[in-house]
Image (cartoon, rainbow over all chains, first blue to last red; front, side, top):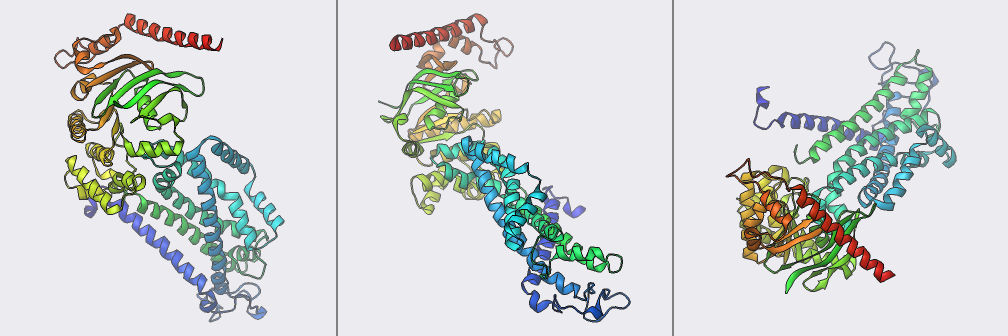
Length: 288
Length: 296
């Protein structure tokens, strides 16, 4: 495009990154609003059953009932209201589990990558051992031990996924630690901890942010999977994973019970990863 | 009284015990510029790094002393040593492309030592940084302070690093091949700038290089190293008139000259290399013998 043919060839890239950031961020903000205000926004009680109104189709199809915009499931519960309430648990798990995983994993990765020596040996061996466990079985085992519930899910995600951060952040910290500006900072009298925080962390931060958003997406999926295998939150609280599990049984009679939570899940995970990519470009002083 | 005194400094690789420095002694007086020359791997950078306390992890010092203004640095506890070196010494690094933190603005990177080590308040440190940047003749110091490293050229970045080295008025600066990574045309300007600022501030300068042409322009005294051993310690004037050691003479003869590009590219003759290697081995044997005698 003629408008983009400026001296700086990075103009076009910047604009695209901006659009992506706004779309993803906007969708997540909307989801957050819905989650927070679900009790007031939801048109129906998400748990109220009405067997006479079972398997109503969404509003544009023949036989839809006014008020039930996205139809009902086999027990006559409103799909839209259940989706809105499900967003609360999805976002809660994403934020809490993602942040905790990121904090713990990044801290260990930074320590291992910059301090090296025995610190690195201990942390790296722990990562190796951890990654030898099959993650799905490990999480099912953890939830079985701790007992089902939201806390168990969050603990399971943190305990399993910290290695994801630790590995990548360690490699990045190691690469940055070998740069001359770190040597210069040390020569100028900075302590090791000071160098780690002031020189290395800012360079590793974009990576951490991208991983963090990916991890939030993963947390949403893990929660849905654990719910799907029936190890999550108590069965009456509506979650997307639970809705998918229930919708699967009536896919031929009522596709909407399965498809709407799937779409919600997909959009949220996609938004998280796109938000990460967009933020990374924002952080990069070369692209800014 | 010399400001920096290195006496009998030895270092080796931790793993296989390869000797990197073999009893190096040298001095730099206040306001003096001493060149440190030798082939790759002769240990010239290692000496500068030992002084600043930034040796690579795999290298350990095995003996000797480094005195800075009369205090033996190696006898000090780690934290005290870093504080002292940070306040009194600075480094001009080799590669300006990697020596600045890419995600931080130039200003804070120059004021860091003032604020963090000397405890100045930020406004005063920034005023000082602007002064030093102006001294390096970078146009528009205010804009430079706000810039990120990628917005500046290699020469501009090296000027920023020189400003950062001089900002805290150090007594000693270690310049580790500060012009090697630059274009030839920029090299000359940077050399002149370092010499000029060194003279104005009266800083002692340990100038690590493999370029004898650079030495003749900037330095007053000179230490020639081979395999971590001092081969010759002399004044620049005496060296260029008549090098005392056959190896230094061969090194000088190997310096490229623009007037005779074909003839001047002579490598150091094998016989000279064999002689200098034998000398190093003999010295090693002497040290080992003395140690055996002491223990036996």
